[in-house]
Image 1 (cartoon, helix red, strand yellow):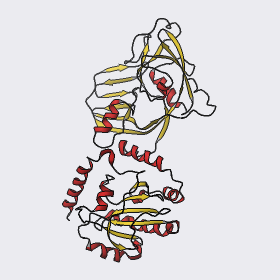
Image 2 (spheres, one colour; image 1 turned 45 degrees about the horizontal axis):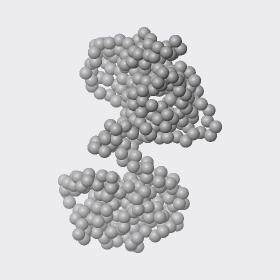
Image 3 (cartoon, helix red, strand yellow; image 1 turned 90 degrees about the horizontal axis):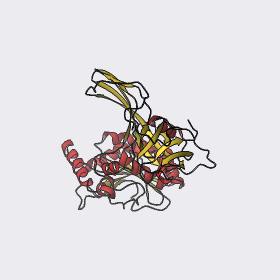
Image 4 (cartoon, helix red, strand yellow; image 1 turned 135 degrees about the vertical axis):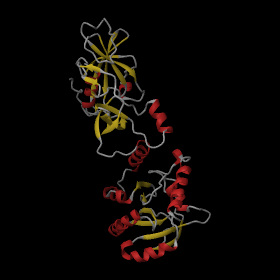
Length: 404
């Protein structure tokens, strides 16, 4: 099979897997049965024995990256053999299976683990390739699947990326497969962070500043209840709120006007967002809201949002000329400009993001926009890629989130 044919196979697998959708093989599923062909090296494995973990790695003789992972797999087999780990080198997508015997013999002790061919009886691509690789939507090799001591898939990925702590926890029966399954599904849906993840407070919802003042943000609503205008100059209007967010669970509603947060008057929406961001997940954030011509007191248990900071460099159309000094300084003057961070936030559970996650090709990672600056037609912008938003259990004897 030449290179062009290999890519045609990959494209065919990709097209076929597009129909698999939510039924794809994933972490947390029972491992499919072994349907190997001839065993080239080591004692044949016909099934998964309770108390034994199995690392099944898919490879081919023509795959250069596969050859780099062979010493690592040998090291794992030799190191953890007494702890009941069985490593299986499952050959797949091979152009000439006769090469496998020769390759394995030449490797000798450097490839010191079981090796099997695929079973092509009634299967053009091979039964292991179809029921493991294609089923898990894996299109490149090397790829590995770690099966725990109960016959459940605990991990899927590149063999060199398998952490020692994960493998040892699996062998010791301490690995949290349910948590790993949730993380795997999340990464499949939203993508994997390229850097370190950070954490901040989250209550959900989108808002806009309302005010009766003169120096206000450009996007503020210039309307304010006269009944409370003597004591408050600004408020935060709830414009969108999903039902499964901390704010909604605490009783906040769309149309409410937040006038205090943390026992202090709210400022601009940026101030309000900053107070939430700095609140510890599980802490209480007291809110005073104006609703139906009366005030109401709410206490929100702050949730947790995980994100990755990012930036972008791109070309842009020069925005219209404008100048804003107070309270959100920003400007655009011919080919030079700066805009502060946006106040809108992404909600992973929103109808738009749910729709995108179902129909948009590739992984989806919603992003909050940050500041941007530009010179001529070059713009640098910042943002935050949102990876998770979750309810946090109330902290034991948690103090209220501090006022600002």
